Length: 136
Image 1 (tube, rainbow, N blue to C red):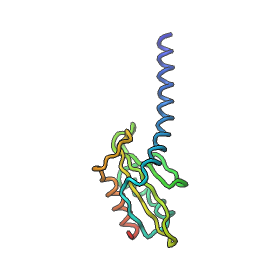
Image 2: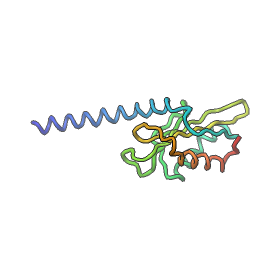
Image 3: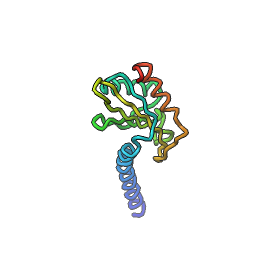
Image 4: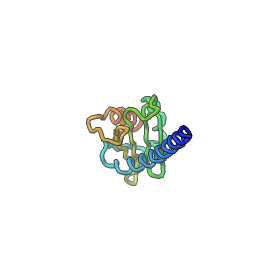
């Protein structure tokens, strides 16, 4: 009987942790905007958005969450099963009337802590974008 109770509690904790993890990612994405490295590109939103999966794959990252309507992507290191390492939150938004876009990359620890000195992800992602699109 004790074993069943323990297993039931463990299963409940796993489900609760999984659900709260998703909402934490969404909240983290919304609250992180404006804190990263930003560059503008001479390319429409759709082209920049379409290039991100390939860029992230080339950099050894996998997309763990994306919301095109909100304009953000969350990417983790490809070998990260349990969220170890540094996540990159990437925001893409159209700017102006000439079909340009702004991309912001925020590096975050898996515990939701900003690492202002860890900008390798931002440099790498913006470097790959600059190879494909002209920076403004």
